[in-house]
Length: 288
Ligand code: 8IG
Image (cartoon, rainbow, N blue to C red):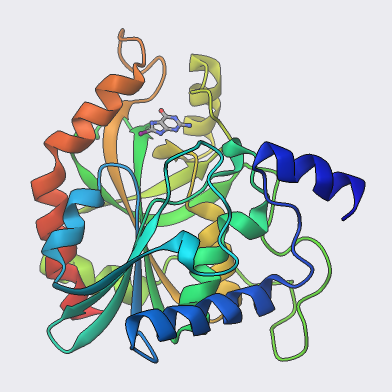
């Protein structure tokens, strides 16, 4: 153990993996053994506000705590462990991840994207990344789902930093044009033409922004602001996995209304919209 690993182990923070791709293959093998399903087709990562949707997507065949799959980061906060479900939605086999980890918990980028890399190693060719977000765009209402059209990665991090990917994996210099698949967005909008499309700014957090920062993000083209998704999208694209991104607006971003930002209000807004986003996800999966 290096000095760094020794320190981070005590903090519950994941030390850099020697080979995150090998770790993902090991997690996918454990997942196949635990679920009895060799390959899945679609992965869905449920962000806050989206977890009640898990029951709407299809028939849950099995549910596994991610702690049972080697390679997933230990939770930074004691007690909260994520789960992954194997769900049958019609003739589609879907992995549903509930509970992601964030940079702001002290995890490194490889830990943040481990679920997406595991899904890719398990055979998934599409990943649906969902999140709760603040509205930079003043036209967005709390409780409204928004399709992510593009992102601003303002985390100053990349899942592709570090040693180059091993043989068989693409170069780290990944083209992010059309990162959020135009094909998938068109499928979803054909189903729900009223859905808005917006640009998601991903920041490290965990603090919310100042009004000046929101004004800057707005001038820079952002419609939504949050603390997740962008690294997972990049990791998915690097592995050739198509990305669909969906945000649930749970608050107006700082300075957009007179109101102060309160985490409890944000959580409550997520719960209130659960039914709507659940139905949206359930209607989208068969299209993918
Ligand atoms: I929910 O207003 C949610 N997540 N950075 N700013 C940032 N993250 C968020 C916000 C917000 N709302």
